[in-house]
Amino acid sequence: MNRYKCIIAYDGSDYSGYQVQPKKRTVQSQIEAILTKMHKGTSVKISASGRTDAGVHAKGQVIHFDSPLSLPEQKWEMALNSMLPEDISVLSVEKTAPDFHARFDANGKEYRYFLYQSPKRDPFQRKYAFHYPYPLSLEAMREASSYLLGTHDFSSFCSARTEVEDKVRTIETIEIIQEGESISFRFTGNGFLYNMVRILVGTLVEIGSGKRHPEEIVEILEKKDRRYAGKTAPGQGLYLWKVFY
Image (cartoon, one colour):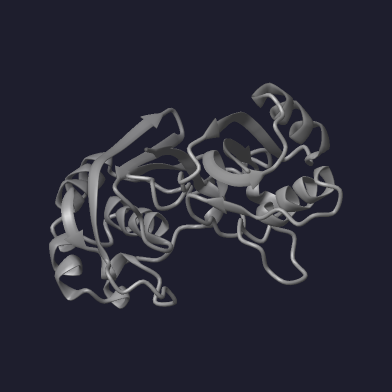
């Protein structure tokens, strides 16, 4: 049995998220269906570095699967891409160690979130960025970001629906960059909780708009209660950019 590691990209607009869900179109179910077809009906399951929600995209999601087939890596890539829908792309395939695990071996991730401030809606960005047509203070958002760096209990920035008990995570970098009417948020860290990046962005936007003060981040972290943080930013602006091993 061979184990293969794949880096994949997908447009999450028309999916109910990454993870398999009954009677719903998901990224995982699409890939597993193709792999099962390649194995003549034998079910093939994949494991990913983590799940993404409905409408969320990925530039560098990592998955692995096991197969008795010994195709060259380039053949795997070509075969999968020839059968997958156009909104999923296999960027690379490599044979890896038998004990490699896409989720448990990951030691960090990078997420990016995109927002645009045009006074008018752009129909070509509606599925790929958050439209926020109001002024934002980058200075205030960057100051607030400084309080988020390091190791903290991020319970306040996690969906109440999560089943994870340990909510301590380390954020290594936060970059907020403006180019014209577009603002990008870049987060890197050792791991992120369910909806964490979207709640962080939603809170930073409230600070940038003047509804909150940057130093409120300290109190929000101390409360360890989701009710004290800002709204969850829409899913379409979020991208799983890279997974580190």
